[in-house]
View 1 (tube, rainbow, N blue to C red):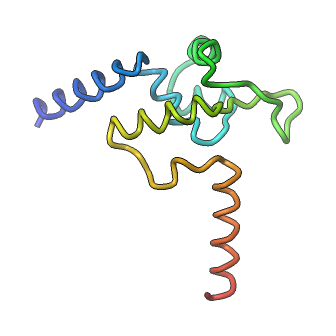
View 2 (cartoon, rainbow, N blue to C red):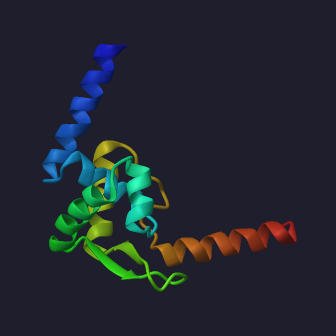
View 3 (cartoon, rainbow, N blue to C red):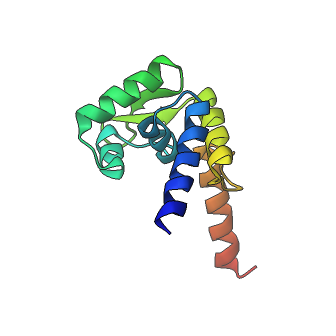
Length: 125
């Protein structure tokens, strides 16, 4: 079982390396399917905020992530994938076998779909 786990991990790392990403950058892209603050991302990645700042700065320079004002907290910034970042994330998820059929939807489209489903369920349709 341990050998299988090692082989799977090595396979995942090679697939990530094909995209010229570090494992931490890949995990950050995976987690940014929905906008998050740097603090939220640090919590999910189990690392310190300065490490996240470094990772996000690299992704930002590559045009994969932008920082936008948080809609509810004027002091905070949200990390949001650009179109190129969403495409890279989808490619990453496909290559690592973790893609969802909803991954191609933007956060706004996901929210609209969620609202539509809740409305339909509320009506008993």
